[in-house]
Amino acid sequence: MTAEDTEIRLRGEIVEQCEVRIEGTEFESVEQYVEFVMETVIASDDREVDTRDDRDSDREVSPDVEDRLASLGYR
Image (cartoon, rainbow, N blue to C red):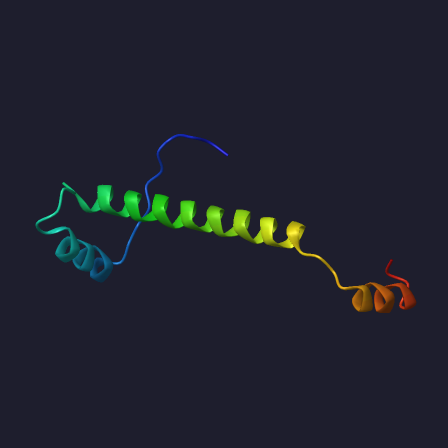
């Protein structure tokens, strides 16, 4: 995986929708806006995975479930 810039093609209608969204904002181009959106989505996804991992590791299993898992050969 490289850290160099890559060109991505977008359908014209998506570019037009982005242009409408950035009117009156600090974004100077559709490219800046799309980059911001992608960074936000990726960061959000990373936080969701971290949160899910934390929940799974902190979860306690009831004694009944432990017994049932043991009887099935999982514990």
